[in-house]
Amino acid sequence: MRRSRRAAALTGVVAAMLAITPVWVAQAQQPSTSAAAQPDDVFPKPPDPGAPAGFAAATKDMPYEQKQNCIVPGNNGLTVEPRPWGQMVLQFEKAWRFATGKKQKVAVIDTGVNPHPRLKGRLEGGGDYVQDGRNGTEDCNGHGTLVAGIIAADNDDSTEGFKGVAPDAKILAFRQTDPFWKAKDARTGQERSAGRLDTLAQAIRRAADDPEVTVINISETICGPVGSLADQTTLRGTVRYAVKTKNKVIVVAAGNTSEGDESSSCKQNNSPGRANVVASPAFFDDDVLTVGAVTFEGERANFSIGGPWVDIAGPGTRITSLDPGKGATKLANRMLDNSGKPTEIQGTSFAAPYVAGVAALVRERYPNLSAYQVMSRLQQTAQHPAGKGGRDFYLGYGMVDPIAALTAVLPEEAGVTPVPPVRDTMPLNPPLEKDWTPIVVALAGAGGGLGLLLLTLFIVHTVQRDKKGEEESALRPLH
Image (cartoon, rainbow, N blue to C red; front, side, top):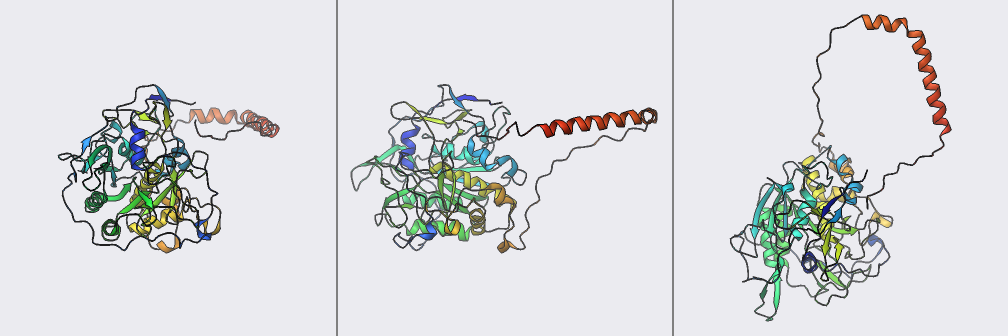
């Protein structure tokens, strides 16, 4: 039986998300080709790691001012399906037999995260680089709250089946960027949104130095034509410090194309053998897990930026998550565009937290694996696409597979012992005293009972043989 709940489209979310991970305008789809079979020497290599950013208090780097109203909780009665397709395809419920994210903390470096009942008691502030005196648990834009919900939302309401990938994990929220807040750039004289390379590096450093953090999710992309990106040695060095020195898994979005948006730097996609744009920190491939987007139909999303640095993929369309408006208590699966029309939530921004959530599950199940080993396990156990090497230019090693990631035996991990799966126990009542009277009566009628039993079995067997596959019980995703 299909159930649904009502939730509103999110006023203002579209503009925010377009600025963070450029626009979701569809581009003509390139044929999916294995990156392993294509030359990648035309693609730039990331810079050598420099010294990491120093540990410092989180403060705004410019005098930002709010230029757009914050989003508000939805109230227009749109239908939200109880279990999104990504949750069903990835079979979270089966994966939770092995891990649920306990004792894991995922840092979300984004637009902040608003408190929500489904994150109650598991949301902590990491820092705010947009407004002083805040700690990251405010989200004017809504993007970060959607990301956090995909990672760690729980479900206290049994009538709604949506849950995050790791419902027992904690969230450490950083407000590092916000398209609704702007400041004038002294060099160019133009207004620009909050969020710079140096504050991203600082946020990564703070997350890396938190001893409880095991995974860092970065659903924002700095994008530009080949050769145009600013010096990123400090950012690269901070990423390397987080992964190699502090043993944190870093999951990043591949980025989205935005053909037709003149304000965006990601107007074109890449194709095998042809480099048009570079996405950072996605192309820091040695140290991050870069995530492309898969559609509801099981194809690669045509907005998902490709490159030899793409490692894995996750659900990136028809997204359902927490309603990110301040004070919201429900879910959301739509946003309002600039004309006020509801449109679906989509983007590699939301594919990345699916993978980050699975990384948290793996870190619980295999606590002795290093960050590099966890990232390798996720790639090796993904649903590999067809083609040479089992790797695709746009989807990497394919859709993340939570159950395989939690259960596969990998030769290179010989000697690694997983944490035993969760087993539910049920107390048994003490045995009753034996009463022989029913046994005597039963034996007296055993002959007739046996005949009835054989007759019943014969009838059932005959009926089953006569039924020639008349029923179909295939489970289809809810629409």
